[in-house]
Image (cartoon, rainbow, N blue to C red):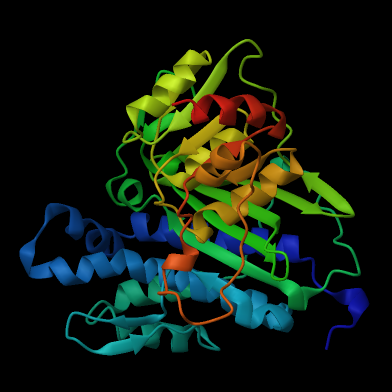
Length: 377
């Protein structure tokens, strides 16, 4: 057993997990059999309707269970508090129910996956080999990873995972650019893996890892990940996101293409320019990388798994992700919190939803002007 002195570095473990997730995401697009399963959904082949939709979900569940397995083995106190978007039980096309579990060996995992991917042994073994690969992500851009405080109470930490954010972009892969260099509106660049750690007693996010599996294109179908991390604990703030603003004299905001026009008008009044883009994780990442100043989504269509990781990084940078409706109503920054309900009363997805909409800011100094403008009738 590890002694306290030898406790693995949770940040390093999560970065490696994000890279393993990115490997699985890339394998699903580069392995022809897997890509075929992924893309069938798009062509609307009626005969296969049920299954392909499930295939993207399968990739998600597999990533989620892999991260649970790896983090849980090194940090047993956290094992029961690693949450994600998907339920691990799965129904395949034949109506059989299968629970996706990471086995002790690659063979065990492959045979579990074959239960879902009936008849696709090659696909199952390709995925299983990525699950069991030993991954250590190295990049100069990671910077120096800090040692986490010895007093950190792992039993009070929970994790929210979004295994592959921006599903439609991931499946279609068609890239379109905005008017701003470096910001794509659709495409593989919008795909992110989000792993966020929060304190269970306060609901405050404290460690975030955001990876873009397709961040750096090397050649056709060959990519390296771009990985961004931040830690915001009372005794430690660190990150690898010291980016200069795109342009000191311009104000930029990013939105989803369906944002309400009256909200866009308020931003215009404040002198903002706009970009529109896919993927909640991707838009929050553009705030982290300082390519935009703010990301606002007025609809309650994101969930805790979309925001936990980027919020932790933004907090390390002096920014935050706020509850849009509450912040406008109270005329001050009301950050999102990650508290799980005491009672089982609420329908499952309701408490996980960021129902009031979200505002991600690079600096909390800009909130006052913003909420005042947004409150105007």
